[in-house]
Length: 318
Figure 1 (cartoon, rainbow, N blue to C red):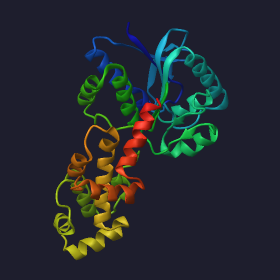
Figure 2 (figure 1 turned 90 degrees about the horizontal axis):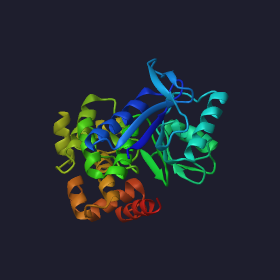
Figure 3 (figure 1 turned 180 degrees about the vertical axis):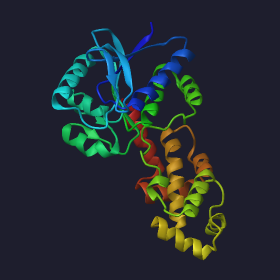
Figure 4 (figure 1 turned 180 degrees about the horizontal axis):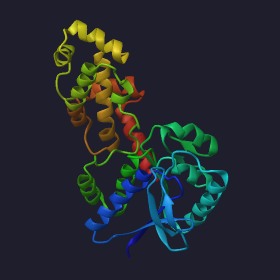
């Protein structure tokens, strides 16, 4: 019997929070021979206007059996009356579904429904403090792409909804189907939930184009020699000029920036646990596990071994 996946929308929902995951499940349905039955619902049914102005035709939520209930986010909180009605409907539906999920600020609806109490969850980083205040009994991980805690799944903003959908599909149908969906969507399969919402490139955000070019080159060639002389040549500057310009633009030396990029690249396979530390260290450009360990300690405050143990513990607790 096909698994019923219901997307529950409401006025001013974010269209991409719906369309990205919906497309992922649609592709998975095709690849799996009709494993999913997809519905877009609202409390009353009919046309529901998104924050982009586009209206979506919905069914009434009703009492039909649901396997997965997914709630998208909105640019701003609903008014009290709308939030209460939606939260009550989600709380009632949660009693008869296998799992509930949210994209971005959809986590506020799950929180108002009481589904986050005693659980870890995430949302868009901008809304994390507010969600923590709303749900003091929850642990809000504001820098995570998605979090699974038992039957409740939450994700960060917009594109993270696709990561969430791929994780849900993998949980149902296995890694091969999820990987094929990712290929068809031309997205990464798949960013682990523990990965930060931020990229080091975005965090550094240099103003100069030549420095931005160097950072992009470094991220794309992490296993190569990324010493100052090599990077200076990419920037078209002398080593001394480059070091001064880079530090002024990024607030750190080129060596420290490269280290951050390498840690960022190494963290997902470290947490995934499928590759050895030797292999990960070579691919990320550290050369050996000891240098990778030093980098992890400086950037993350934990060793690769500790990061892997934490990731395994979270998996076992699900």
